[in-house]
Image (cartoon, rainbow, N blue to C red; front, side, top):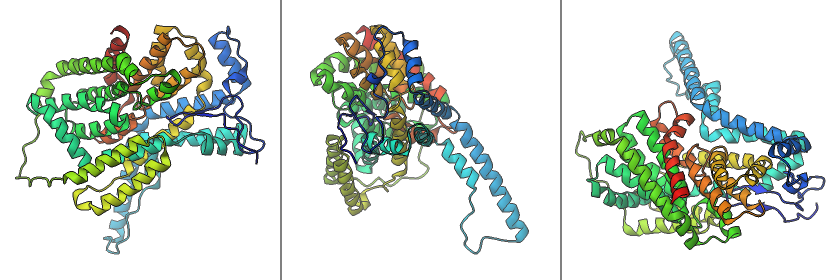
Length: 502
């Protein structure tokens, strides 16, 4: 086995884009994906000729992008697939009930209920969090077909970095624990009391302070806490569908820009902070205060638009006198915050933050009477979603890079905003670092556009799947991609104006 030449660039968002000189670890395995410089594109060549030339030189490029587009299209049909799954399972249950009635079987033998295999498979294909993982199988098959088994194993098993999906699983689980949620709830309750602690006041406090928190505890943690509190204080009150989608879109957009006050919390900023030497002061002066202004304006616009409905929301009166919830000792909350801080600190070192997570699970078991049950399923589904996404994103550079490199300042902003809706915004900003000769104005435009468009779709920003996973149960037919895009459209325009005009 030949020595692995370590000239690959690994991004913190979990994507690997191979540069010239990278060779696979196994003999006979060619560099994959093809290094961008290997195409020999002329700097004066038009975009269409570059894309067609790259597709002709490497037919796999077109196949990989078609698979990626198929995965995106799949998300639009997820709700219908889940509905079909329920129909199949209901028919299966009716068939079992009829058979039991004919046989006089009252299930006294304790046998487990027979499930519908087709219904369960349809449920899996209808899970939005599973879609990109499902299509990653098709992508792996295409790699095997075009490049061989060795290349497929090397790409999926070595080149693609799963740090971000693993981090999201751990941070989501930690942020959803009872001590952390109670602490966040107390802090936001203090802010909501300024408005009388009404549902509208809670709504405004969560959507204002929660996203900004992402600049310090990372965006996935801020998304998890904000979504869980919105579920309890807002979505549980059954607002209208329009307000549900408006709130979801506002949450996603606010979290996407809320991490730009610092240079270490938002994945799209992490991609460029070191190569472009952007520090805390630079981020706050060029992005942070504009993001806060945009969040305040977007929240105010939606608050005015839905003021009557928000004002009419009332928490249901308890039917019985509820026993006060047992408080969590301060020292237990402090330990949880330490685990959270350690995970954020070690966000780029999976062995360390996963090891810390195992210690946390032991601590949670030892203090179980102050905890809620640790539920890994939502976090694992989100991690599966992101793992599938980074597999797809790693082979899309062939068309994203030439597109970005041919745009002026304002078109680049719009292009980055649009492309972000169809690929993780961290991938967009990372590819921008590979474009030679970017001026300061173009650097600003691509990052501003990437974070501005981070709320338009579930795949636009890494924390979005976490929010969708938590809030999906409040959308009976599933979260519609079109409904989300429409809900995020106005806040996206507000954020774009803030970054371009302020």
